Length: 373
Image 1 (cartoon, rainbow, N blue to C red):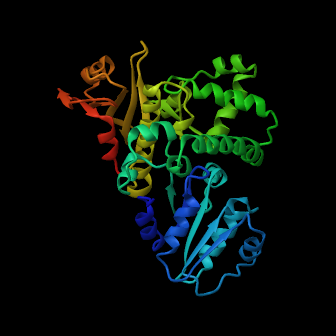
Image 2: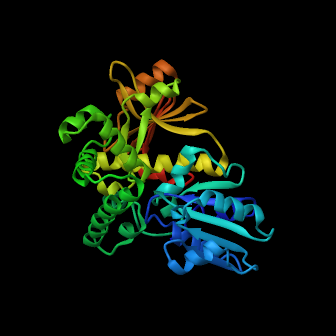
């Protein structure tokens, strides 16, 4: 299926180097090869291939190369200085596309020697907005059970989708975690992951999980950070005008793959909304350079709204997820009255949309179709 970001990436390649990051098996390689079809002379090189690795190290691609695609380059020692040198000395006609997952994204946390040389695009699982552009009969209920990763989403049956998911997680934990961190207690990190599957949408206490798994809260925090880095989960923090304070408060955890969530249809719906909203926010960041962020709202007395989209650290929109409740939630109403933030209640099963003051009750699937990515 066509990816929405393709046209933006092709346009950005004419200006700077492009880095595509995202979860494993989300379609980065497929997209890069699809983009290559738009150029007359393209070269795809994967660092995992011994033959390709020699070409990469010797910079032995043909001079006429119009688009150079380097996949899994982050596995190369000193890759940042390498690609900086390649980019700074390349002929004017050559464009560079680099793809990767955990390590490629993590380098930004340790100083950015490539500053000013690249545009970043974060590729996430398919959203309803993206699916709708491909004229398929896939609906939201299919997405809730299968998730948005290409292989399980398009699998012929649920069994094949479940087999993919089991192998995917096992491979990430046993291969990528070892590559990312020197961790050998697979059982503990698997237990943390299993617990997180059952706590989607609720503020997560590291102390509580630590007691259940019999490890320290700091170890839980470390494991969650690793699972984040591998694009298995992401955290949504409570909104606060004090960024440091917000980070310290209990986050809510969601899964990039909604098919991993253990819970009822309402929980699956909330998780799928979270991925679509994050994809929308990343689109605003990566494609338009707009400072959108995703949070949730919570007061000291426990009043909570599922999501809040903020712009320049100012809340612009509240979003509540409901399976079938067509009455405005008390939380949305209370926050709207106290702070004047407009709200949307997205309902999975809804006959009629309506609006009461600044609170809209909308069909969830229809709204998600309308997002930019």
